[in-house]
Image 1 (tube, rainbow, N blue to C red):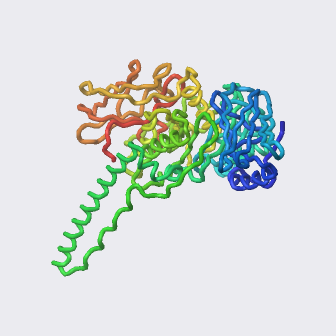
Image 2: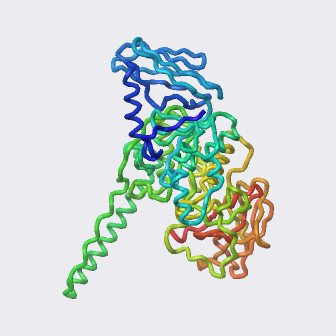
Image 3: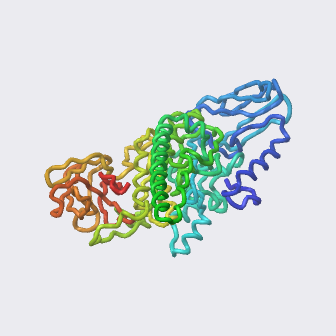
Length: 524
């Protein structure tokens, strides 16, 4: 099968509004209209009821036929109707869905498959197509050869949605190269492993920041969000009050010395304010792959973990899917070495580096604080992180195929029950044993291991003076014992705590890198 998006659609980035108008004109010939993303070549989500809804004349009877099912509904006083198809098993068989009203021509959707449907959303890295990524990477002298191969191969059981009512089979390079490179690579890897049709759909909103995805009312009704907002408001008010008192004292001092008074401190932006929005309820789907980027939340005073967790809970409630999995890409990306630099997934990782003679300067910027935020969300039910420290750096990393493959691995393990590890060693707890610190890990998989070099490295210890020193580290079962001759009474331990820790070499034997961590909060 070979189908293409219309020539008038130059890129997946700008299709949504154009497609909606185009399809509305097409459906205007029929009295019955269909809402959602229903179209020929689509994939329906298996094992879930499929709501088919739309508009018709008042009290008009509408019938939907598909896969041996025949469902009928009557339009209400406003012309709205809905039927629910019973859950379907996965099927590679191209079938026809027919929607009939009492008058007018029936609507037919051809080549309809049943399998797994995933939504995607994000910022620039999510929106990068093969075309745009190739141009960006070429400037660095890089090329994602695996992605190039993916684009140029036919994938008849992978279907791509270009907004509203256009679905195409991923069988044409001209079509493939215009789609989100991350989603395309994810879908290809997932379809290959599951051996069922896979459908990919772009977001139902225009901006990926949490504030734009749900309403202010919905956020403030979320208990976790409202608790954090109250704390931030109290803290902000206290800081402003302290600033005013300091200003008043400075003014008194200035008047006493016959000097100009300093400017009055400006009020802080109101915590919780921002550009809020909303999203439409999508058709049935399995999960969401979210690559937000490194922007803020769009909500004043609210950090990413708080906003994302609340957004996840809100969407689950509003969309009527209380347990859909939320996969998100770890940021900032790259900076670490890989278990196997020859593996296509991690071929753009930073090369292993010797341990720096001096401790990294972690006081500048928020790089590590940002990286620290993302693993916090793993604790949220149904949220799973796509680890990226070994997938290559830069703001727009070249290896989109690696990101897609890693995301598929997370989905297979977290969503589809495959017995595979989805994370590298993750800090669980630590105990101080005299001059040593023993660190316990989860996600040890087949066991802890170090890679490259002749010893495990990347750990640092500090005592009450809060000065960190490089430490020796030894694997002991599922734990790591850390000690330093310069720290006789350790109180804090860090691992890979730097912007580009290519010298940190702890992995599990499944080939996944340990997540950076710290047991202190001294930089906050």
